[in-house]
Amino acid sequence: MSFFNSQEPILRLKQTHLDIQDLDGLISWRWQINQRLIMSWLYTRIDQVFLLWGWITGLIFLVPQFFPVISWIHQAMIGSGVSIMGLMLMTWLAWFWVTVERLRWLIYLWIGLVLAGLLLTDYGIWKGSGLILMNLCPLWLIICSIGYVAMGLNMRSRTFLICAIFHGVAIPLLNLAPTCQFLITALVMSGSLFLLAELQWDMRPPMTSEVLSPEQNAFNQVQQQRRRLSQLSI
Image (cartoon, rainbow, N blue to C red):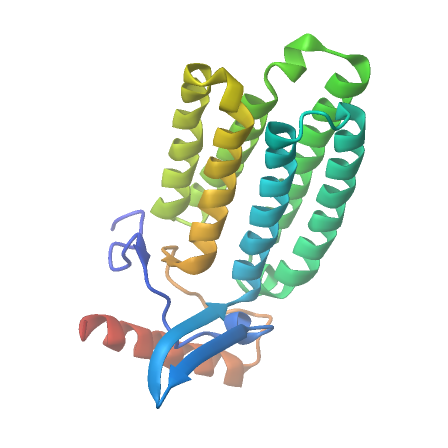
């Protein structure tokens, strides 16, 4: 038996037959002209988490790239505050999904990784540590890589493992454009997050959840069957 779910493509367009945990807090929008679908957006709570961190990381790394006159200390204070608020909002958005999927450890993992990164970053800025300041971008790329590797292995997702490799490969590329390190880091980190929010990524097969009622588990099984049938019809 394959470790990964070989029936699932690594990335694909989002499917509309969603499980209970994906329907909770779903944001959807459709643009039609004369009953002709032009565009549609579909964001589950997990997609919303990716969007949230995509904007946060973009803000944190693009500001020093394009506004270097802003004090590093002020950037550290604002970045830390925004990141902590992001962690709280992430926990609120994702809690039901990770509970149903038995992935609560993901929340604790990312909270630990982000807080560790913030402590090192703030220490480097306040103490003027050249070693840390010269390696802020590699530091955060490594932190993200660790998180994506853990997600990829535990969730059996090739998508997240590829994201980890992408972040790791970006580290040596930073030396090729030393004046654009923050821009490159923003593009890699935010770009990956926005991509994950816009497309459907692979993960292990669904499982019955003790959190859901028998009716909700039955509904999920029906939705899973519909997804398989729609995939076969493509």
